Image 1 (cartoon, one colour):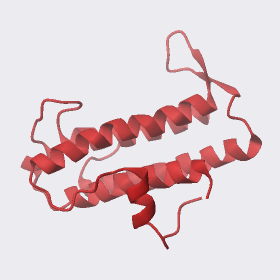
Image 2 (tube, rainbow, N blue to C red; image 1 turned 135 degrees about the horizontal axis):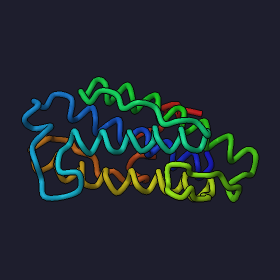
Image 3 (cartoon, helix red, strand yellow; image 1 turned 135 degrees about the vertical axis):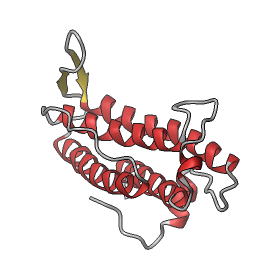
Length: 165
């Protein structure tokens, strides 16, 4: 498995695991405010998933999709779909050796040139930043079996599972 597969697999699996841990929580806990980041579990999950959706759309030179639902079930569906699409795009870029090729971010005013490699690295590190906040919130809510969230723990726990392309 190469480094890109590890980073994408860890990002996908760990975010999904945190969504699964949040699934039984009542809405009051999902929307409880904390003094960090996007302030709530629901808002943080939505922000992370929305970023994957939007950055993928922008790199594909298409209009950003409409914002979708924020129930845990809807967030899981959005996460699965957006990570599959983001991973496929990252793998296409890797296979073309296009890490340093540029694309135009038309959401910026004025539009800004970005590299595919920089954008993909941004999305993955952005998610890790916000997952740290989710880990804190879940622990503060008393959720049990919250993972550490690091790549080595993911790698150990994912042995024998298939990664997305």
